[in-house]
Image 1 (cartoon, rainbow over the protein chains, first blue to last red):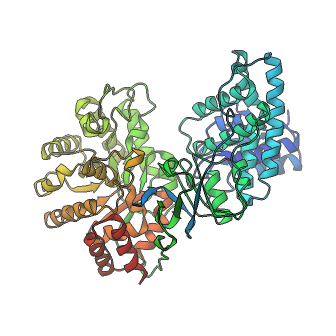
Image 2: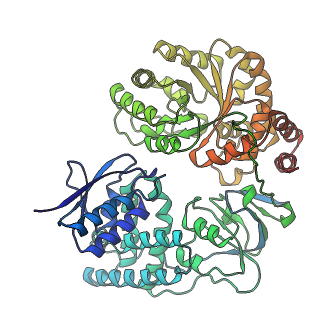
Length: 91
Length: 536
C-alpha cells in the first residue's frame, strides 16, 4: 500500500502534550485519512483520538513517524504540517 | 489582625473586594446509581457530552486564542469516543452516566500518571465534566456573580464555564488549587484580573470578607488594603553576569532538557527520588547509571549537584518500605533512609560515580536531612569510598547550623533547603494549610538563621548554595546574594526572572538589602524593607 512517512523528533520541552495533540487530531479528522503516529518499530495509533495519542506519553527528544496512507502532494503536505504542529511550541 | 494566605500570583496589579465564595449546584458531583438500562445511560452520556461541550464552546468563545486552543484540546478529549469506551465498564456495574464520566476521567488520570502537562489540565477536564453532569441530571444553579460591586471570587478551582461568567465586577480571583498554567490562571492573565492560585487555605476566607489580592506579593490578605499591596519591581539589567551563579532544579530527564533551554548554569538540585517513586523493585546499579548518564548529558552546562534519595514514609519508595510513622517529617527519611538501606545507598552513589565516568560531567553529590557531624562523616566516607570527589550536605535541620565549623575537612560544600529548614525551625508542617505564614521564607527567624550560618561558613571556607523554592522570588534571591551565598537554584520557569534580578544590582546594594531585611522583626516588614530599597 502506498503511503507517506515523515519522521520527526519531538523538541517541545513538555513533549507531545494536550494542545498540539488537539491540533493534530483536528487536522487528521479534517483530512479523512487514517493517519498513524508511532514510535519507530511500534504499531502506533490512529491519530484521530486525542486520548490514544496522550496515552503514548511521548516525551521530549523521542522520534515519531507520521504515516499518511496515501500518495501525492496533499498527503505529503499533511504529514509535514503535522510534524510542524508537534513542534510548534518548541524553542 | 490580618490573615495572609500565600499562593502563586498571576498578574502585577493588586485587587481589593468582597469575597464571593463560589458554590456549585448541589448534587452535581455526587456519585449516583443508574435508574435505567446501560443503553439508556450510554445514550444520556453521549447527549450530555454533546450539549455540555457545546455550552462550554459557546461560553468560552470570548477568551484569548491561547486559552481557546487549550479548551479546544480539552473538549476533544471529552468528545473522544475512547472516553465513552472507558466510561462503559462503569455503566455496566450500575453507575449513572455522569458518575461513569467522572470515574472514566479518574481512570485516565491514573493512566497518565506523572505527566505534568496532563496533571495541570485535570482540574479543567473535571470542570467540563461537571457541566456535562449538570446537563445529564438537569441541574441548574450555583453561584452567579452580581453585576454591581467589586468581588473577589474564591473557589477550590474554577472551570471554563465558571470563568465565562466573569464581568467587570470581578476584581480578583483566589483558588485553592490550580497552577500558573491552569485554565483559571490563563483566563485571569488574559483579562487582567489579579489572581492568586494554588493558595492553600483559600477556602477559609469568609464569604463577604474584604480581602486584598496581591499577586506581586504572591498572597491574599484578609483585612488588608490596596495601599498594602506589593509594588511589582521592574529590574533593569546592568551587568552581564549575575551576582551569584543561578542553577536549575530538576527531577527527571524532561526537567533536565527544559533546564538546558534556560540560561541556568548547571544544576543546583537534582532530586533523585523521582526516579524511584514508581518502581516496585530496586533497579540495578547499571540501570541507575544509565538513567543518571542520560540526565547528566541533557543537563545545562555547568556543575551538577545531585541529591541522594530523599524519601520517607510520607514519600514512600515501594522497594524501601519505612513503615507507618506518627510524624513522617521527624522519622526515617532523607539520609536516615539511606543509612537504613545501606546497600541501596551504596548502589545509588556507585551509579552516580559510573555516570560521572561515562559523561565526564562536573558532578557533586549531597545528602538530605543531615543533623549531626557523624552523619556528614558517614555520608562523605561512603561517597568518597565509591570514587566521588565532591561531597556536600543539605542544611535542613537547625541542629547542623552551629556545627558548621566542625564540617571543615569533612564536606566540600553546603546547600540550604529553605523549605525544610523553615519547617524544622518553626515546628510548622510545610504541607499544613494553616502553617503558610510560619514557613514564609521572609520570616526573620529564618533570615537570621541563614545569616548566622553564613557567618560560620565564610571563615570556614565552605561555599553555600540555596536550593529551596524561596530563591525563585527575585527579591529574595538578592537578599540571599547579599547574605553571601555563592549560588541559588530554582525551577526552570523562574530562572529568567531571578537572573534578571541578580544582574540588576551590585554586591554592595545586595548587602544593604540583606541588612535591611535582617533588621525587621516580621516577615511583612522584611519583605517591605527589601522591596523599598530596590525601588528607590
